[in-house]
Length: 263
Image (cartoon, rainbow, N blue to C red):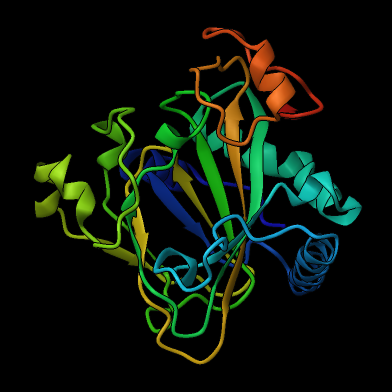
């Protein structure tokens, strides 16, 4: 795993809000991530679980990607991958925080001839607000312009607010809330299999359509800076835990949001 970052990479992440690290996983690690992700998703489905956004498989959004969250909760192999301190170290270094907790992992599979993902920012959907939230997006297949790689609006993490903007069917719906962003040149981020993209939780990003007959698979994890507090939204929190919280409480339950790295 390529965990050593240069000062140029760190500066680029903080300026643009995203960073591509090619060959983040070596070939053996990539094979393991593919195997574990496939098995964890299959196990979840066989146990009667479902992809988060597949309640209506004929809907537009169901054809954007298939989404399966918190696989580390139900698959030991995935837990071992996600709890790797090295991942937290890279995320914490880029975000300039002194501790990193897992918010949630999720497999994202854009189906063959799948729809594009509209521009959006992640953190307003979550149960905490932080300008330092960060995610890793690991390509399990080559992510190309042809099959729906990510696109970023550089620098938007600096101006984004915590207003919740839904991911609409129109690629540019976010510009109704941030009209000034419509003048920013989007940057594609093709990512070879085994590469990783890191992006700030307030960086606007999208994904193109998958114009191929093959799925485009990725395994991702969202990270929460240690010390983050509850904002009142449930998101992925278990119901009992959610009901026990008051706005402003520190989200530090290691059984739900494990601390994987501390400076």
